Amino acid sequence: MKTGLFFGSFNPVHIGHLAIANYMVEFTDLNEFWFVVSPHNPLKEKKSLLKSHHRFDMVYKAIENDIRFQVTDIEFRLPQPSYTINTLAYLRERYPKYEFSLIMGMDNLENIQKWKNYEEIINNYRILVYPRPKSKKNEWSNKKNINLVEAPIMEISSSFIRKAIKEKKDIRYFLPSRVYEYIQQMHFYE
Image (cartoon, rainbow, N blue to C red; front, side, top):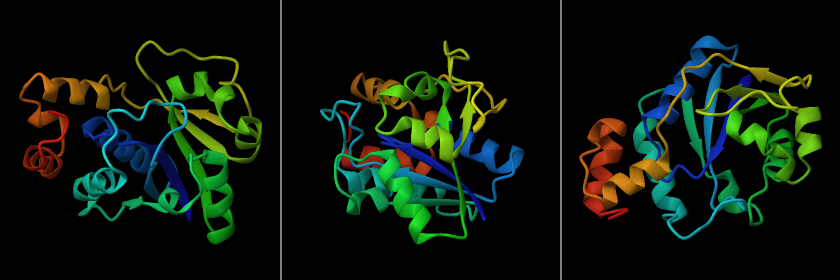
């Protein structure tokens, strides 16, 4: 089973995330796509981060009717902060018949040397890299396990969504409808 792993805070999940997921399962050899909700990325500030279960619930609401997608809270049960290498090792041991590929934006590839044991990740896992605004090929782009994919460039970000909500902008079409309703109901990011 070829499974793409898309790690992120998903604070909140938005249509850009879903478009990338859809592209990966339709235009690459992946059979399925897992959204791995991270409790806390050690390279990001935690101040505007919603509680993990809320972010998990939003991803679930966004994808629940699509059998190609899953959301996992696997990192909620692993030591924190969450390091991708630890999660990958755990998943490889737990699901030995699965062939996992990392999904990341070019902006993350540009900074992969900041990741714990990044060389082990690059050498032992296939990484599917999608383009990001203002990001360019770099020293990592030509490595054996790095595959650049021609996915559409998504200029939307979770920080844009949070800022727009705080400014009382109508951003309903940037989010899956059930996620938009949940955010409004819970008064998140206001």
